[in-house]
Structures are given as C-alpha cells and as structure tokens.
Amino acid sequence: MIIALALSFTACKEAEATSASEEPVDTTLTIQETRWAGTGSGEEDPVVYNPLEEGDIVYDYMDCEIEIGSVTEDRIVLDIDGCLVEPNDNGSINLNADPLEEVELEAGESITLVSQTMDAGIRLVITYEG
Image (cartoon, rainbow, N blue to C red):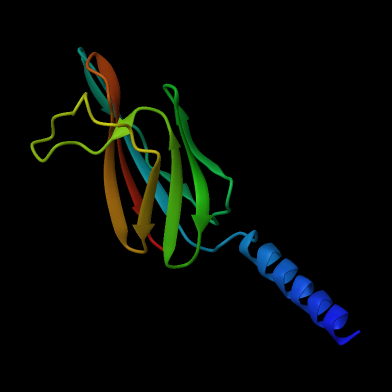
C-alpha cells in the first residue's frame, strides 16, 4: 500500500514537472535576417519572439526551419532543419561543412548562421536575451 502511494505521488510530481516545462517562458529571441543574391542583398526587419514555447517554429524560409527544442530563462536550444552553418572567421561559407542540427544559446548570447549556398542565400543573427 505504501509503495503504491509513493509511486502515485512520484507520478503526479513528474506530471507537474512536465506540464511546467511546456508553459510559455517570458524570454525573448530575436532573429535578424539578411537575404542576398548576385544582384545585392537586403536586410529584413528583425523578428522578435516573446514569450517562447517549446515547439514554436521561429524561422521557415528556403527549405530551412528553426524550431524551439527547449527553453528556460537561462538557455534555449534551437533545432535546425536545413542547410545552415556558422560562417568562417573571414565571413566565407564552408560548403563542405555538415549543416547544423542544433544550436544552444545561453541568455545574452548571439550566433550568426548562413545558408550553405553560393548563388543566393540568407544570413541570420540570432540573439537570445533570456
């Protein structure tokens, strides 16, 4: 009887923890996109997301999708489906690099990602403000 009661209590606590992590988190993610082609480039207005929730799609363009994998006040994990890589130190694009599948940012961090293309593409500056 005591074991059944303990297991029931544990299951309730796990359910509470799961539902709490699925709540929107009052933090901010900003994505600044620049689209470029052989004829020039154009910077889009920054897109600001707040609040954030696991499963939200925060970017979807040119066969590239970015989804929030997990989010807390201190850290965000972004799942990436597409051909994004970090640019080389000199700004060039490594066409042979493996595309990123996941990016983790701590509060206050930014990352620059570029599409792995030569004729036209995107440059994203993603900032997690926590």
